[in-house]
Amino acid sequence: MDSVKPAAANSNVAGLVRSFAKALRFKAVGVAPDDGVKRLKFREEKAKSGPLTGHRSQPFADKDEDEKLRNRAALEAFLATLFASISSVKAAYAQLQIAQSPYDANGIQTADAVVVSELKHLSELKQCYLKKQIVPSSEVTPLLAEIQEQKNLLKTYEIMVKKFESQLKLKDSEITFLREKLEESDRQNRLIEWKLNPSGPLSVLDDLHLSGLNPNHFITVLRHVIKSIKSFVKLMIDQMGTAGWHIDEAASSIEPGVAYCKPEDRSCVFEYFVCREMFDGFHQPNFSLPVEPLSEKKQMQRHFFDKFTEMKSIRVKEFLSRNPNSTFGKFCRAKYLRLVHPKMEASFFGDLNQRNIVNSGGYPGTPFFATFAEMAKRVWFLHCLAFSFEPEASIFQVRKGSRFSEVYMESVNNDAFFSSSNPNVAFTVIPGFKIGKTVIQCQVYLSSA
Image (tube, rainbow, N blue to C red; front, top):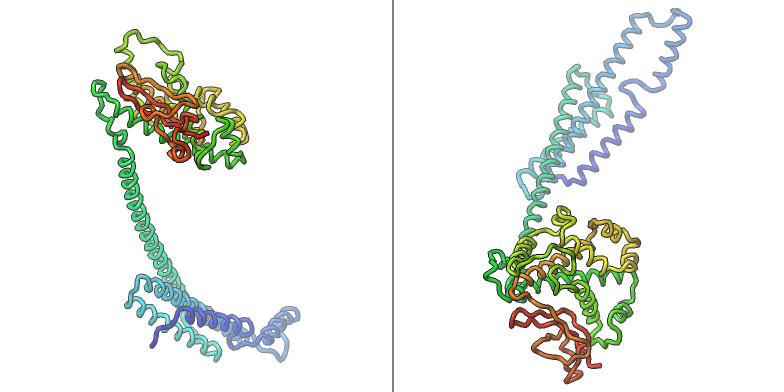
């Protein structure tokens, strides 16, 4: 016999159940509804008036009650058999579904045969009911039918568990695939970063000793600092946009009268603002923070190199929570209060909660402060490395209006050379550094105005 489609199976089952329900609503096995009402009234009258002449005697009444009990038992057995058969159809239909994906020809044929067989059985039960040919059965039949129904339900649940397990395995394979893609993307990112940063990532500093320091190590750390500054500036500009700030007016308030070559160049003035605040005091051993004096030059050099080694691998959040009153913690709080103006914080977040926490000696757990703290850590990290040199690295920037010098400057907007053969410095974006005779160029924004 051809396979029965799932939709057709559901339709047949539903039709059979509706037919049985309709029949049960209006019929009883061998007893009409009106006849039952009459017999009920008869029993009530008999109870009130006692035995009447002309009515059936007690043996006939007992026989009638026994007949009704047998009919009821037969009907209950019939219904139990019916629902056992329906549950068998449901289990076979579930098996039919799960055998389709992945495709299992034998499983489909087996389930199809069970569905067809049980539909035939349901049709036979329907005909027996309509023809009032329900055969009395033993007391064990309803129990056996109920056991069969429970087995079918259990089989259905087992099939669904297998289906969910299959879906779970599919999700696990998708997760594994996406994790592999992520790892591949990370490898590509590291390769690109290595190409952009030939001095190498911070891992090259793992086995560094004080005697092996050279300017390339400082350049490597400086590039990580610049990357962190750019990330914080991007976050700050995004917050400005969300808060409804006019970016042009904000840029003009920092450095007025600058003619930008491109609209996106306005981010440079915000980088200048952040660097100006974060690097202020860089030339002093502890950013002007009070600290115990170190008498010997060599002792100070070793002290800062040890701090550099300590800070290199720490997680800033964990370090601040363990050492809230450390010198770096004081530096972090002082720079935040200078860099983030109260009006700015209130505009960004609607309150001054972060500022209040910092003022009370704590550290907010917000993403904004976390980005700031990571930037502050890298600036402090660079500062410790600068004072590990002998002589220590010095910081410099150029004045506004200075002529461009390729020795001390690097332009962040080469478009200015197309509009003027001799552009001037509008502002210093990233400061420069000198380590002995080595000059690390500062990054400047040029303007032809």
